[in-house]
Image 1 (cartoon, rainbow, N blue to C red):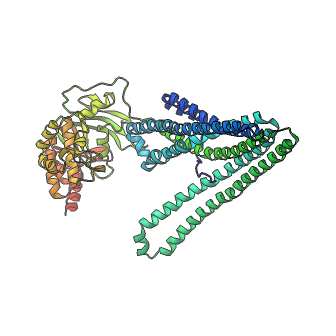
Image 2: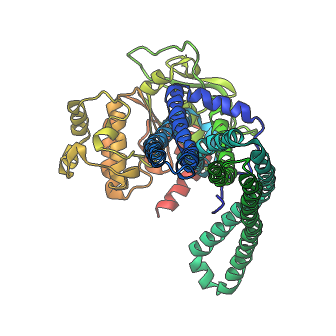
Image 3: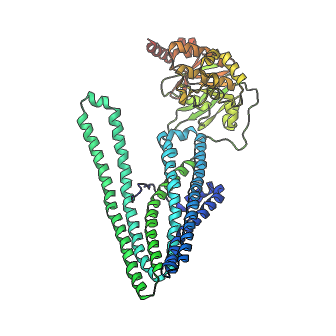
Length: 590
C-alpha cells in the first residue's frame, strides 16, 4: 500500500458552493453521470454477492454433501464474476468520460475567459501563474477524474454494501467488526491530517529545491567565473536538507499508519474467528456465513484506506477548482457597452485624444493630454523611455480606458463602439511580429478569417512578397511553427504587415515595426510598410531617427504631455528637447 502525495494547503471557504458551481458547469453531464453511477452500482452488487454465493455453496453444498448445490453455486459465482468484469470495464470508462467531458468544458471556458480579459488584468497577473492554472491545477482535477472518482465511487459503494451485507448476515459479528472499523476510521483521520501538513511542507520544499537547482545551473558560468562552486553547493545543500526533513516527517507518519492498519485488520480477523468460530461450534452460526463474513471483512478495510487516499485527491481537485473559479471571477475593466455603436463602412480615420488623463496604478502617465491626428496622416510619437509613447498607442487600441477624457475615431468615443467595429477600423502591428502556430495562410487572414486565397495573393503581390511566399516549401500551407520560429524576424514582420493589409483598416498603430531588424531586412520591410500605410492614418511609436524623418508629423512626449509638435525639420530647428533626442539617436547609430 502507498499513500498518495496529493492535497493542497489552499484554503477553501465554501466547499458546498464550489461543488454547486462545478455542478452547474457539468449539468449537461447529468444523464451520463447517472448511467456511470448505475453501472458502477451493478458492478459493486455483483462483487458483493460473491461471498454470499460462496457461503451458500459451503452450507448447502459441502456441508450437506450436495454436488448439485456446489455446481449451482460455482456457476452463479462465475456468472457474477462475468457481470462484475463487464460492468466494471464500462463503469471505469463511463466515469472517466464524464470527468474528461467536464474538464473539456472547464478548460475551454477558462481559456475563452482569459482571451477576453483586458490588459489591466495581465499587468497584475503573472504568466507563470496563469499557465500553472491551465496545467498543474487542471492536472490535479484530471488526477481525481482518472483515479479518484472511480476509487471514490466504487469504494464508497463497497463500504456501504459490505456494512449492509454484514448486518444482514449476522448483526452480532457486524457490531464487533464495526468497533474495529471505528478505530481504523479514527486512525485514518488523524493520519490524514498529519500527512497533509507534511506533504504541504514537501511541496513547498521541492519548489525551493527546483528554484535553487535552476538558479545554480542557469548561472553556472558566473559560479565558475568567481569560483563559488563550494558556497553554491552549500546553499543547495541547505535547501535539499529541508526537503529531506519534510519527506522524513511524512515517512514517519506512514511508518506508523500502515502497520497500525495491518494490525487492526489482523485483530478484526481474530475477533471474527473467535466469536464466529465459537458460535459455529455451538451451532449458533453456519460455517458458510463465517467464511462469507471473513471475505467481507477484508473488503471492509481496503476501501476505507482507499477513501483516505481519495480524500487527498479530492482536496487537491477542490483547491484547483477554487483557483480556476477565482480566475473565472476576474472581471475586465475594459468592457463593451450593452448596445454598442458601429462605425460606418467608410471610415476616414481621424483620431483624437481629448483632455486624456491615464495611469496604470496611481501615478498618472498622461495628464490632460490632447492630440488630434487628421485622417491619412503618418504621425511619429517620440520621447524618452517612460514618457508615455506606448501608452498613447495602447489607448488608441483601447487596451485601456482613460480615467478622464476620451479617445475617438471620426468623433466616435472608443468606449461607445463595439469591439469588432473598433478592431475593423484600427489595426496593430507590434514590434515583434507575433505569429501563431499554424499555416502561413491562417496567420495572414487572422484578422479577416473569411478572406480567400485570391485576396491573400493580391495582398502579397501588392507588398512584393508573393515571390518569397511561392519559394516556401508549401506556399501558403507552410507551417510557421510556434511563435513563427520557422521564419526570421524580418519575415515575421512581413507576415504581420500582410495581416494588417488584408484586414484593410483605416488606422494602423505601429510600435516601431523595424527596430529589431538588420539594415538589409529593414529596407525590405520599409518598402512593404509604405504600401500598407498608403492612404491610411498611421501612428508610429518611434524609437529611431529614420521613423521620425519619414513621418508627416512628429509629436514629442515628455512626462505625459506634448512638448513639441511639428515636422521633423521644424522640430530640429525650434525644439531644444527634440534636438537633444536627435543627437542621442545619432550617437546610437554611430
